[in-house]
Length: 146
Image (cartoon, rainbow, N blue to C red; front, side):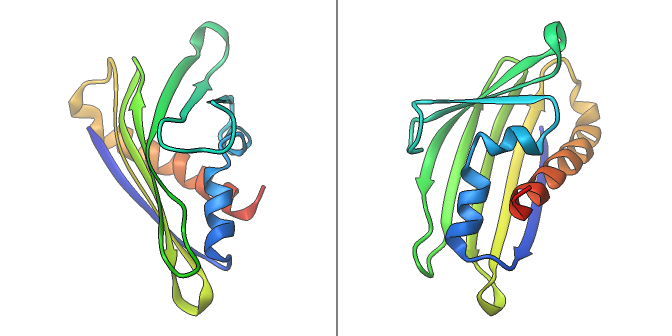
């Protein structure tokens, strides 16, 4: 399995950073060639299923993720969301944490562990680098509100 960690400090209040990272349909705009469905629709809670479908036509695959931890941030308390990847192609988990940072800014920590079916474990380093690049760009776009 490939593991990676992304950390960002942004000039946003905790609740705004949280909202930008957990507004699931926005992930489709942040990750090219991706569509998102959420069941049931808002509000998110433990048990919500988020499905990211990436690719084009027959070269696409679904990445279903179940929200297993949903703890939005309080005024000065951190927020944590854990998604368990339940797909046939991608397995593992992702955690999104938003906590108070310096100077009233938000500190974002995105942890992910993933395996891609049909990709041998010897290529975990490649999966890690690609994941860090793709998710790093997505996190940056989401936090910018783009």
